[in-house]
Length: 43
Ligand SMILES: Cc1cc2nc3c(=O)[nH]c(=O)nc-3n(C[C@H](O)[C@H](O)[C@H](O)COP(=O)(O)OP(=O)(O)OC[C@H]3O[C@@H](n4cnc5c(N)ncnc54)[C@H](O)[C@@H]3O)c2cc1C
Image (cartoon, rainbow, N blue to C red; front, side):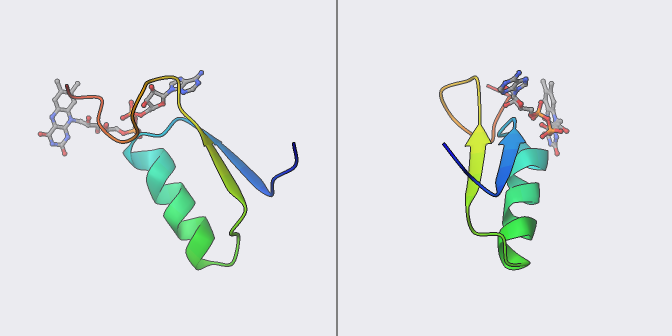
């Protein structure tokens, strides 16, 4: 598999990095998250 950017961890920092990269032209992004859902480790 080829992608331009791999982000390990889909918490707030990872998702913010993905949004920022996308807004700056990197659209081929893979977020690897070990949990079932992105974004919220406070459950
Ligand atoms: C009990 C609790 C209550 C909180 N309440 C609030 C609140 O009310 N308001 C607030 O603003 N902040 C709150 N926080 C703080 C907030 O949760 C953190 O500041 C924020 O989640 C940090 O984001 P992060 O992306 O840096 O890390 P994380 O949220 O920890 O995200 C990291 C992600 O990476 C994943 N990960 C780690 N290692 C791997 C791996 N090897 N492979 C794949 N995935 C991996 C984890 O599963 C996780 O989803 C609270 C924190 C806790 C613990």
